[in-house]
Length: 287
Image (cartoon, rainbow, N blue to C red; front, side, top):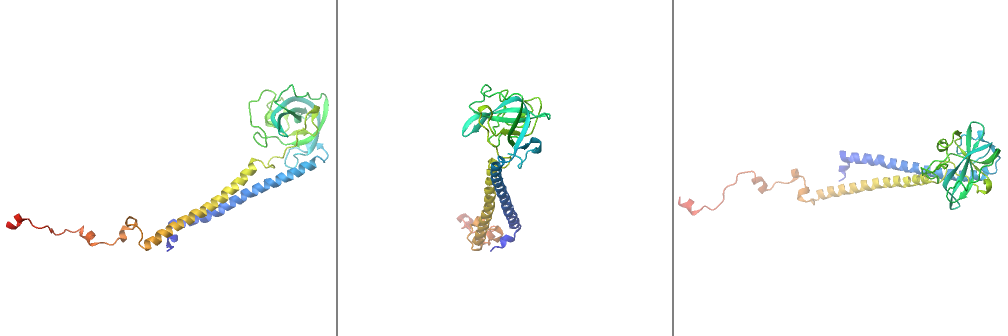
């Protein structure tokens, strides 16, 4: 009854199923491992942020370039404040406001972006306190450059002069006449009465949209594997029922193979000349 499984058509179906199911399971497991890695990175980043505040600050040159290990570390730098910019649409404790970002000229040919604090309300240069004059030494948490649209960073463009959407060297180099370090610092204590900006998680360590995308892809791949099994079983059952009905002669006439249809006397006679059995007319008899 199941000899149809040996036909070329079913060989192709079976090979596809045997390859598709392990592939879907592998991809689902890989996406799940990616989600678990992001959860583990998130937990380790939280633990690291708690211990970084207790560590002694190190010179900026020792921590660059910023990576997962150095992000959030305490650093110190000395220089003179230069241009000041505002970073609008930043939330702190559920309230909308803006960062006050000032470039620190460190004397090495590059400037270090320093977030001196946060203020509530719409970004307004009149509200932002002027930076201290003269030579200053800052201490704070080192942060990696931001990417627009990620980790709460707005992707809005076309901002007024004196504002920037993301704190990154790629954005700031177009706003100031000197090179900028590919990192920034948030002060441990807000300057001039402003509130200090909390340390952000290192890139690819938070439970952001990417992490939940990995979790969603995990479910999709396992659903695909189940769908492949379901479709194979449905096709198998349909084929088996067709074969069973054919063996029992339950198929309708149009579904049977014409080559296997037995010939009837009528069907045979349809191809042969038949004798005229009509009753002769009286005119024929008289003739």
